[in-house]
Image (tube, rainbow, N blue to C red; front, side):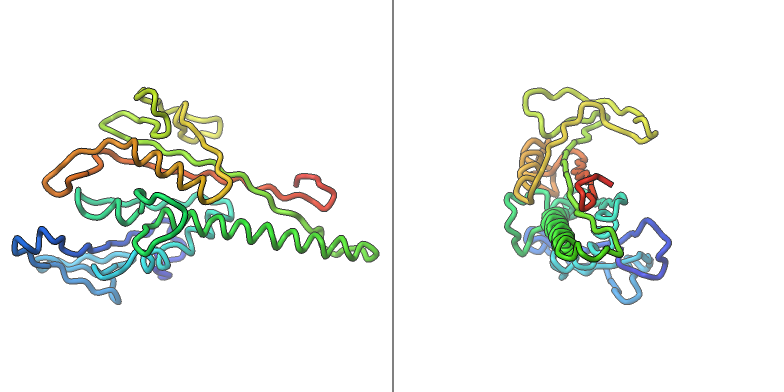
Length: 253
């Protein structure tokens, strides 16, 4: 995640220790995990494990986001795939960390990674487009002088999708009418695609949060000993970005 020790690595693994719940405390539970954020180690029953990042139970979601987000967001905006995967047993805090239950675009202190990525993504895209428009105007004002650099205007188009993997089946969380399993296929560029998956066009953070909220409400949940409203499935929220540069003459380049 945030470690710079191996900049060539495309996968970073971090561990977040969640605090004890009120139920666990009332039952006499005690913390048995020792963490060292400097050495990035976790020790349990005299066994020590080393990760790229270690986050103690006191860390807030906004601090976690500030640690994780910069390289991922920059990579995404520059045309690379960027993925955050939360893995852990039921009740370990995956949903809380990812923030998939957020309901609106206004960020709150406890909001997780997804709402914060969405907010910063649109802010960054709007800022890039604003800077390009200003550069284009400056270029137009100096038409009497031959510009040394061809100034371009950045435009962008985004779509969002939300799917659920339940058992061995894949379902579209944005389609209420049916629970028809979708099929995996190989695309024209040899990439794996989900045939028939709904792609919602989003133009701002509010649109994207509506997609996230709609999909979350359609997820399969059930009660477990660890979590009364456990998500009994895996979910994948995806945002696809297409950026277009246009020359001063309006030609796409």
